[in-house]
Image: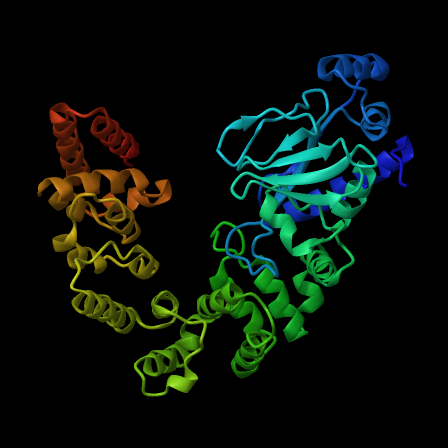
Length: 463
């Protein structure tokens, strides 16, 4: 059985720092590692044993002696990348032996049950727990508890084994469902089929660089699927197409990317890949997108990808077609669906926001009503001008409050453009006057806060 030693712990922490650092460097998300050590390990062990009223298992005592009392190592992926296991969105390895405690669980009647078998040493952001099973052979078997399913899952038969296995898997955790693809009857299986697939993917994520793959189209597409986030501050998708076309023909790119869609993979990846292709290739994919719309209409149903849906088509229309053509297709689709259902149109934010078009505003104006959540997001995304916001602030209550909320949502970098015209000073003065009047008449604290936020957003010096 593995033991915790000073040299072994040092080797683990070096690997953990390297893993977290490489992933964080690429992902652009916050992450890193923190450790706290005991000045007097034996006294601390005695203190913890006295508090818990039990002798600590050898592995836990050795962790205090040779390792850290408290640690946190984490990383996160950005949204929108294509993961081989979509549930694996982050890494979270941590413990706090000094504050470890026995949590209460629930019985079949929903009553709290006091227990002294499972000692909790780490809590995930969603409330899931990592625990030591004190009744296991080692006394330090690591178990995950999911708060939603109220289910215990064995991760490793001892703490050193857990460290070995989780290190191979890149520190995935600590949400309970993250471990599921890699579980066998004896806990995590990093060398099982899913574990090997994950390790290969994660190694490429950490190490692949554009200069290494630019002449190798399959590997270049693999890289971009790993890093093409929907976060515009990372790797903008619109920059991918020009990079690829500098080394490969449009025909080869489409053929290879389409072939990747036929490989075994999560359904969500096949769907997201279609969107990625469109957003990366832009107008070069226009004929492909038109063919998808024709296929959807039933004229060539065999050519319509089974993973595509209305949301995919709307995103592709915004990314690849001329605005007049794409927006008309999507608006007709939304109106058709509303007629068929006989229901009022709900905020079609995901369908229309990607157009970033002011032409959306007059279309949504007669549809806005309370509750306005979603309409404000769509208005903010549609590049409103000052005159649009003034008109809405002078209109019915639903439009007024939608405009107020949308002003607070506008990206700071876009607000000066509201007043770029010759009437910019006058328009901002009028907007602030309308907002001040609304603030003075508002009764609800929530409304006043939203109006104050809008006023603050417009409070910048005009040159």
